[in-house]
Image 1: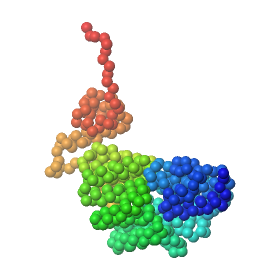
Image 2: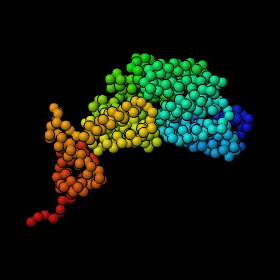
Image 3: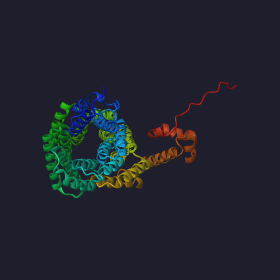
Image 4: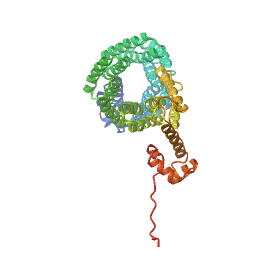
Length: 472
C-alpha cells in the first residue's frame, strides 16, 4: 500500500532536518519502509517529484552513513543523488536543484574529487534565493577550498556567507565558525601572525557552543578534533589529548566509526610529536584498515602517508617506501592532488638523503612541485623548498668531506645508471646490460650481490633448462 503524497513529503522533510543535525539513525527510521538501508535502492513507484525527493534523501543519508560506518557506498550515494538532480532539473525547480548539488558536492569530496566538488557547489550557489540554503552551500564550499590549500578563496567565501548566516540557526552558525577557525589556522602560518592562532581557538570554541545548542554532537566532535589538531601544531600536546578524549566520548555514544577513526588519526600525529612511535604505529594501522573499507580516498591517502612516516621513524625503511608509494598513487587516482603532493614531500623528507636514487628523488619532487603549484599553504611551500635543497644536494653528488669514501661513491653512481637502464629497458637484463656495455651474466651477478635493492627493477629470472642430451 502506497503512502499518501503529503505523508511522504513530510517524512522526507523531517529526514533532511535530521541528517543536517547529524542524527542519521533517526533519519533512517523516519524514512521507514520507503528505504531498507545502505546499499539498497529505495522504493520509487510514486510521482516523479516524490521519487526525486526520496532519491535525494536516501542518497544523502547513504553517503553519511557510509562515512560513519566506513562502508564503501559513496559511488552509489552519488548515483542516487544524481538521479534526483536530473528529475529536479527537468522540472526547472532551481531550489531543489541546488539542494541536490549541495549533497552531490559532499560525495565528490569524500571520494577525493576536489575539482568536481568545487564546480558542483559553485553551480549550486548561483541564482539561489533561499538564504539558509545558500549559506550552507557557501560554507560547504570552503571545506573543499581549505582541503585544496586555497585559503584566501575560502576566507572570501566565508565573508560572503557571513552576511547570510546571522538569520540562520545554531547549526549553520556552528559550521561557519568551525570553517573560519580552519582558515585562521592556515592564515596564521601564511602571514606569520600569531594572533590568528588565538582567533582560530576562539572560533573553534564558538563553533562547539553553537553545535551543542543545536544538539549536533557529530559536528561538535569534529570541531574538537580540529581544535586538538591546532593545539598539537602549537606544541600543546596534553591539551590536544584532552580534546580528543572529549570528542571520543561523543562519538562512542553515536557509534560513528568514521569520525572515531579520524580522531585516532589525529592522536597518531600527537604521538609522533611526542616520539611515541610504537603507540602511533599501533593506532595508524587500524586507521588505515578502516579507511580502506570506507572508500574515502583522500582520508586514506593521508593515513597512509602518516603510516609511512611512522615506519621511517621506526627504521622500517623498505615498508615505509612501499607505503609512501601507495599513498601517492591512492591520492593521485582519486584526484586529490594536493594530498598526493604532501605525500610526495614527506617521502623526500624521510628518504631523500639516503634511500632514494637520484632518478627517483627527482621524479618524486617534480610530481610534488606540480601537484602543489597553486597551494597557498605556507607550511607546504616551506617543506617543498626544503625538499628542493635535498634534491639539489643529491643531484650535485658527493663532496670530498670527512664522510667521503671513494668505493661508496662509485657504488652509488653504479646503482644510478643500472637503475636507469633497467627502467628504460623495462626490466630486461639482456637489453639493460647491452646499454651499459656489460654482459648479461655480469649485470646479473651485480644485481645478486652489491645491488640487491634493485632486484625489483628486473624481470623475473628464467631458469635455463638443462639439455637431456649428454656430452660424450
